[in-house]
Length: 96
Image (cartoon, rainbow, N blue to C red; front, side):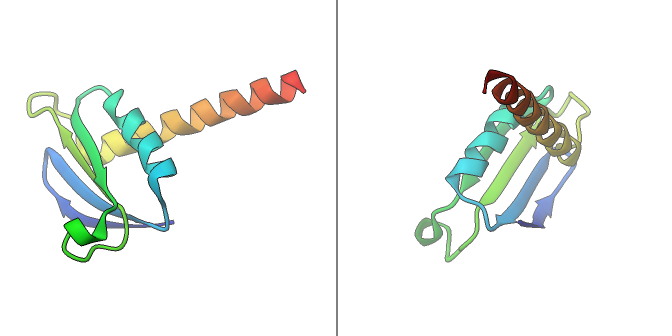
């Protein structure tokens, strides 16, 4: 996985997530939508409708009055995904 920031402002972030598909992008988008201060999170993987883009692009918008940096929100969402995976791994290990 390689990340490349395409655009960044105080309330918006567009970042290319090379090497990933819908599986990962849906998970991170879902975690972002549950993150405090995030107003919107979407991704696009359709190159024909995106001017030739070949890798997924994640877009994050934070609430203007929430004082949340979109990059920090992405970090928080990533840690939440890791926690969920760790919890699942523990439950799975205990079950088998």
